[in-house]
Image (tube, rainbow, N blue to C red; front, side, top):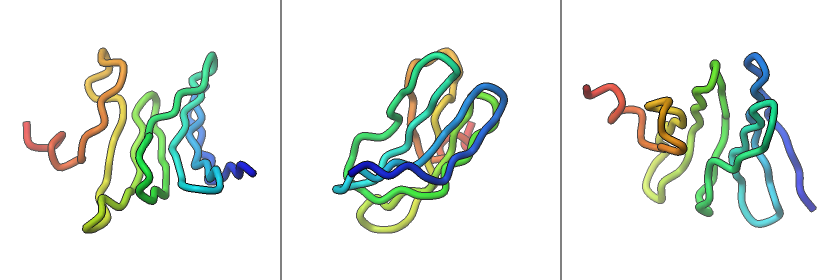
Length: 88
């Protein structure tokens, strides 16, 4: 069974955590359609949203990292560790 939780809202956008019985995923509803932002089996938690920018914490097999979606805004999907975003 699927369990949704930890919803966060910003304007017309909603991000949440979904447990499908095997692993967790981060999902985004933009007022029109739902997008799955993650596709690996590593644990994820604490999704947050501000405008069209989404961030969450995920275990990468070694330690917990912070990941982001929506940088730069013209890309369809770009998920990178936040420290890479701050190095410009």
